[in-house]
Length: 165
Figure 1 (spheres, helix red, strand yellow):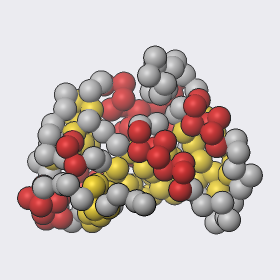
Figure 2 (tube, one colour):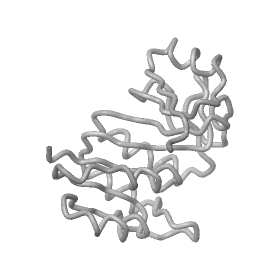
Figure 3 (cartoon, one colour):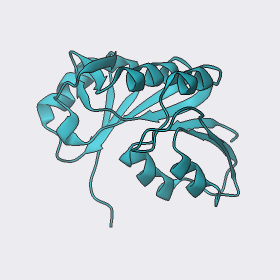
């Protein structure tokens, strides 16, 4: 369909690579050299790797990376974070990461948040954005019902998934 998709460099982003469609053409932007290398095997995907200073853990989220993604448009983005509450929103541990994620969100038409249940209901250090910026929050079946209800009251679609076989 020729969409452009940003995929987080978090654990969920690496898992997503296993399930990407191979029967349509699209563009994927990642801020991880490791993910970029994995995506080379997909003949149907054009791959862009964000530039900048790489952290020891792998992602690139410095000011160069933020500038790079600020020049792109994404049909959809898949992000993750260190915490999410209906009141405080999405939060992360560093200002660099939060700034990078804001740049991705600003230029994304559809916004998906991939959050493990243990991070929903918790706040981290730096606020990225309000929860209602996201069209959909995808989490696992262990997420507390009250956290999901609080997000849904803000108009956010929530999806819970079980383990795959």
